[in-house]
Length: 526
Image 1: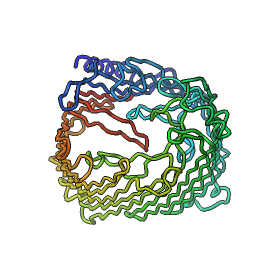
Image 2: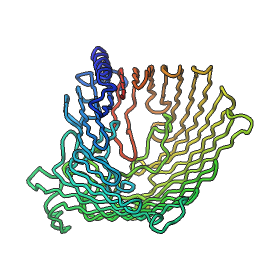
Image 3: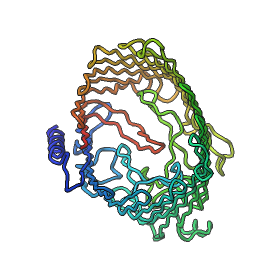
Image 4: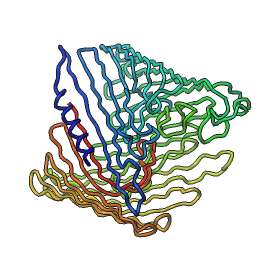
């Protein structure tokens, strides 16, 4: 606990020391983020780590002066939190990113660590997700030029980050966007663009014994003597009034993956149609993948070793039981999609009264392979929720979710019901209650959960929750704490028991082990 308080005090002092600083005509901005956990022994979950403590800290500072900008980010693991051991072995302090950039109306160039995305990210996306411990920025150079509103082109070259260092690989790419609507003089209410991307990853192989998880025979059989991976993408985007259509096709040359024992080529197909009119909207998305799990380096199999972005096209839940077992993308081969519909009814007499109706369904199957010639159900969920604002003080949400998922050949089905009630006591104080129930005949059986939250705007929030397994384990996963927000700084202190499972964001998942402990989270920006 002493270390938790010292870290919070140190970051708070740093914030106050550098906030709102100006250097010449430029402006300094930045952010701090820290998560520290004191682990406790728990008979139900097992012994705590030997150090009984972990702390992940991120400090980012940016400087901007007209068209020039620069920045750095430093990460400190003191030591690294449990579940992030692939990032660092114990204590680690390192420079996570740095850049200098010049940008004018039509031209920009950046030297340093690059965060970017081509199209929908199916062939390339470099980004940071601290919850997942993922940072695959590209250390190198990027340049772009806009020919008015008609054509935009950009290119990059560099080496990708892998954990706290850089992979022994090189990545280069280019992206082109042509606005056909502007070239043809189509009315302003419509957009039509044709886009394309190219990405190349090169990594020289070291085929010495025990240095690689593939034998030289694999390359000989596939005709590969080096991992010179090529990926191409073509995209078409159209929108008019409330209608939008977009599609993308990706081709990937032969590559090795964690799923295939031999080098295989891959492809991806993505299509989306959306329509909205006043308070009604509907979106339908279809995607098919085949061997699209692209790694930064073939010498690593962790979740952070990814060069592209394959988001899970399923509903992203915020309720505990509905998010108990999130869907993980099968990059080796899957096909499916989702449909999302929403509609609102607004009272003409009172702005405090309305109905919000929302329905969502998604389904994914495996694609045929050498080992399985049939389409196997991977995931199916059907959801419906209704939000009702009864008055200025009362609001309710009722959610039903049915989920089916594959668990090593066994189909597991669950039915979840959630009731969410918010009561606004006065202009500053509110009380929110969640009650949840999950029914399942497979896996761990039934669950119940509850959350009570008391808020005093704009600063205080106090919460207590419990999630209990009625079936197999009979274990309570309780949690309680409070948060305080002042200006741009937020501190949260909590204590509880956390269930083991996968934490997922955008289709990338990290396994989080079970633990009991005290957690301190601090975020601040200036």
